[in-house]
Image (cartoon, rainbow, N blue to C red; front, side, top):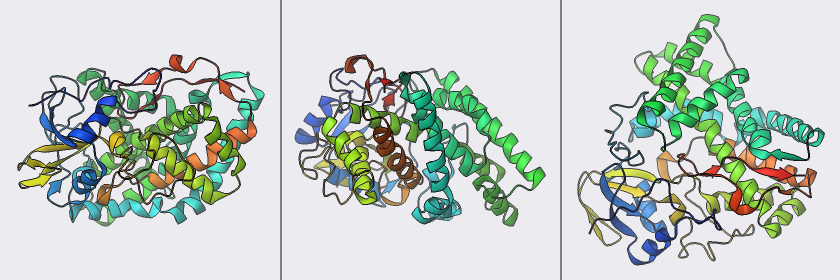
Length: 407
């Protein structure tokens, strides 16, 4: 029997906003690969168990070129054919995927981030903490830190003027808000396309150097048949909106978690000067929260069996990321954030060749902001009841829309 289980907005408890929908837990135990109908009318399979999720992401019998399952009712998009911009390597399989991804990976290695970006991250975090200390006692953490820090970092990385942050953030919000009509989301996408198109043209005219967009332009000059204008612009758009929206959501949700989990908060403060322990805590927050709330999809290239279900050629298979990262077969007491958890891996950034390109940038920002925030403001607390914190339930990434706190 086909059931419509992916809801928009995703149903979460007002008293437990950090937990996945309870239906996902039930499915994981009873039917970890379950036939569903998505709100836009597509039919496919929902995966809620960790082992099967790893197969979906790592098995070459699944292709990354898939239809959208997370759009509103009545919208069924073809696999990239009507996308406003070229998604480039995001929907490519090997070996093409690695050829294009390789253009970018040098800027996202831990060593490159430590040498090129970390001093800048340290500087802007301290500046924003100073501004909070000089401002009103009650403030919105989203506007004060979780939004501006990732915006500044992606602007520094790409060579994008920070003065344009409000416009590109508004366009990103429209593009990624599945609660908005298609026309409004497309307007956000086209604004970003026009913006990156003009920025690339300006960098070409000025022979700009030193940033990632300039490096992509240089790669295109070296081989225009390999990197077309559409692909170059597509990569710029993707990096701009994904590079700040995901980390902003994660920063806000992580702060919310620490404000409501005093033991974990104190642990982070006590070990703030121990990078390894802070790193483990950040990994656990990413596992526990898993902000990709509508899941990631793949399409079967041939018939196969998965978790007791028979998957046919062409079937859409979607991994419920927040459910698989709470799988008790893999994680002991998965619904508790344990900052000393011995963890081999989680799937918050996906898995396999398509694992999130910017994950090390996100880690650097989280490891810098969170311990310093609570060191600097040990009495920081929610300014409203937990149930009154407005959650982003229609965006592609789950997060808080506003987080009023008092220092």
